[in-house]
Image (cartoon, rainbow, N blue to C red; front, side, top):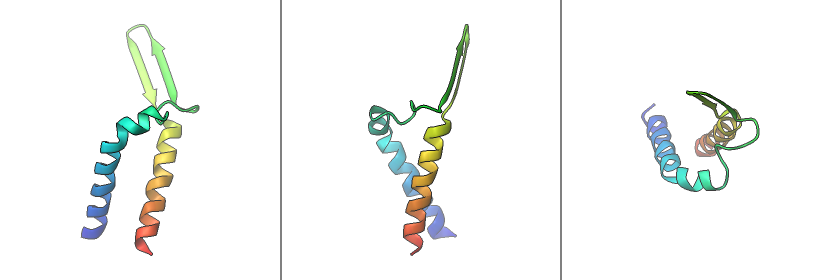
Length: 66
């Protein structure tokens, strides 16, 4: 359990540090990300970006378990 939590922490820190780079290549602004802008209201749900990040994290965790 401790190793899993440390791995998850390292991945989250890495994503946090890489976020400006990921934003420049378009992550967070992909087709499928839901964005609704109305007068005084802004709603953003990064559906596609979340799925891509989930797949990448799952792949990294799978590789670490091998």
